[in-house]
Amino acid sequence: MKTKRTFYLVLIVVGVVIASLGEKYMQEEYALSIGFALMMLGLYKTTQLWSNDKLEDKEKEDN
Image (cartoon, rainbow, N blue to C red; front, top):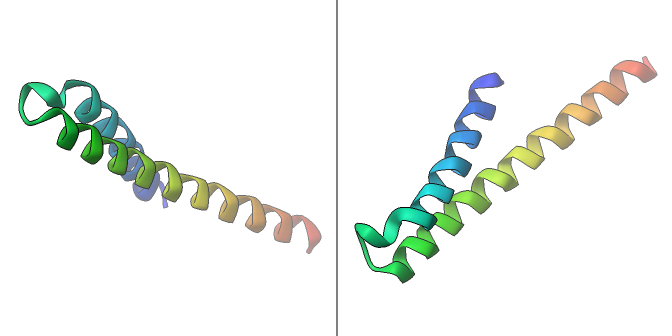
């Protein structure tokens, strides 16, 4: 489970780096698009993990 969190954090960081520094290596529009997409994917998956963890914690408390 921690591997997924680390991977999604890396996706977020790589997305931000590509969005901010990518214009040096490719056209600015592509860099922004790719960076933003990676960052949003990482954020989406991270929030899904957080919500699943909260649900599991609630179920443990109820039992």
